[in-house]
Length: 388
Image 1 (cartoon, rainbow, N blue to C red):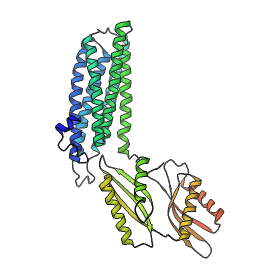
Image 2: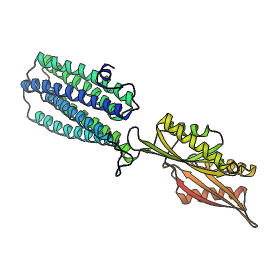
Image 3: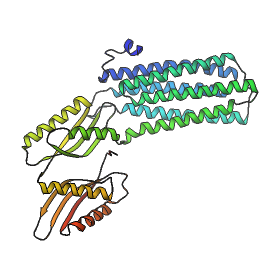
Image 4: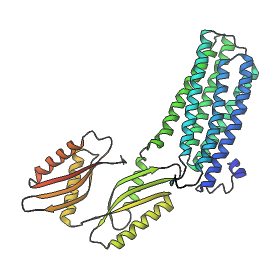
């Protein structure tokens, strides 16, 4: 890409927070300039022609310029370093800026819908102009370029905000094309579609805004990591020597490039704890270096006695037969004179329909069918991720 080469120092080092911020700022400035230019051109020709749909499309570009300004400020504020009050940094400002952008889009959509409906109730003649057609065609070309530009910039720094901007520009291409088609149809057939197309553009803007609201709210509310990411973390941890299992993975997103996670790792209780601790340190360092993930691991020593291992496998199969979402960990077997205690944790996902009491009851009943003298002491807990 030419613009990053010209305006971003060390543009290839996209892992650098400073470079990431520069990419975001550059994208914001380009968006502001392009959208203000389009607003001025469309609003002028739309006003002269008395076209509510062209004016609506112009206002949409004005909202895009405001969105670019908010995005610019969001990247700038997100680059602020961590401080005593915000030890995890300020990267979530990027998500907040995206939320503000989406709210602005919805407000603009509502106003455009009202004005378009008013034009349907009280129609006015629209003057056809080839100048207006030329402006709309130029707008489509610029928005196609902007969509590609945002997508490439977003891919370079893995920015959801810029991907949203790319999708918004792509939507603008569709909206402006619809306005252009309506104008040509009205000119050649005398079927007046201007106000109706204004309604269509407004509804399209509202739909786009609602989608962006969801996309920006998800990380702020703590959206679960993808199944692919969970599987990657699990498989990578399991690939280190001495690791027998891993569970209780939690991933926290404090903004792009600021992810933290914790997990429990099962290792042999008979192994030297210093050696096990060294393996855990290595795993944490490797994740930070290669994945940009701040990972904290909890050491779970488990017995590798054959009888315990066999019971763990049997019990894992049993709970999965009750519900595929269920899993166990931290199994201990305490034998007594009259009965044996099976002490373990049972994890279920948020999608699981069974209550904690139902899970305990079902597992105990199934265990008693095979081991009448075994008593289950079960701690039921929710899993924060899903690998489905």
